[in-house]
Image (tube, rainbow, N blue to C red; front, top):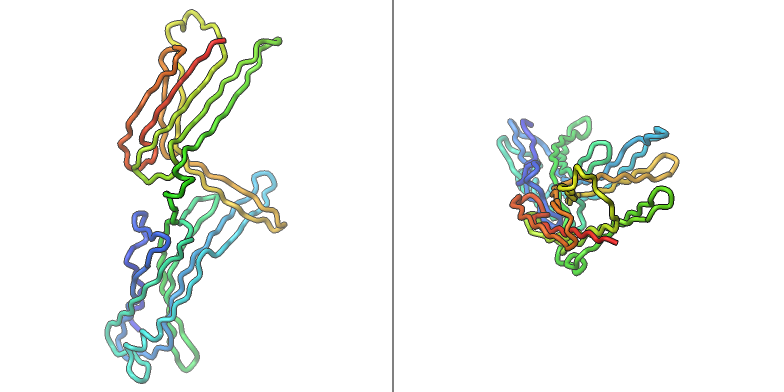
Length: 290
C-alpha cells in the first residue's frame, strides 16, 4: 500500500461550508505498488458538541460531550468492483466515490475557546487482512456545517419590540425621574446583506437645569448594536448544570441628538457593508418636560 487518502468536494475553510440537508460528495483514493488484499472499506460521518470550562469561584470542572451526528456507510461492494476474484487490488491508482446527505436538523459548526466547540469529521477506514490479523488504515477529513433556518416562518416576519425603564430618585425626597427606552426591529428573518429598519425611542421625564458653561451643548447620544449570542451548557461530576453565554457585537451604530427639542428627531444612516444584517437604522429621541 503506497497511499490512502480521503477527499471532499469542499475543503475545510471558513468559506466552504455544507448546509444542513446538503449532499456531501467525495472519493477515497488508493494507490498500491503491488497486489494488495483488501477486506473492507467503510466511512463514518461524525459530529460532536464539546463544552468545557472551570467554575471561576469553586474551580469545579464542567464538561459535556454530545454526538450530533453518527452515520456509517459501507463501501466494500464499490471497492470489490475494483478487485479481481481474490479480493486483491492490482498495482496502480484506484478511486471509490461516495455521497452522503446531511440531516436537516444538523447544528452549525462553532469553536469558542473557554466555552465549547461543534466539529464534524468524515473518517475512511480500509481493512487489510494478513496472517496475524487485520490491519486498518484510516484517513480523516474535517468539514464545516451551517444549520438550516426557515426565515419565512411567520414569527420571523413580525416586528419585535423590547423596552427598558430606569428610575432615578432625587436626594432628600427629590422628584422621581424616569428614563424609558423602547426598541423595535422591523422583522427578524434576515439574510446577510439585507436591510432592516430599527427604531429606538427614548423618553426622558427628567428636567434638570444645565450649567451655564454647557448651555449651548446638551448632546444626547446612544448606541445601537447588532449582537450575536450563543449559549453553552456543561455538566459537573456532581450532576450540576452550568450555562455560559457568549455575546459578540457584529456591528454598532452611534446616534446623537444635537439639541434638546421637545419633538422627536429622526436620523437615518444607510450602511453598505454586505457582511452585516443591520444596514438601515432609524433613531428617534424624545424629551418630555414635566
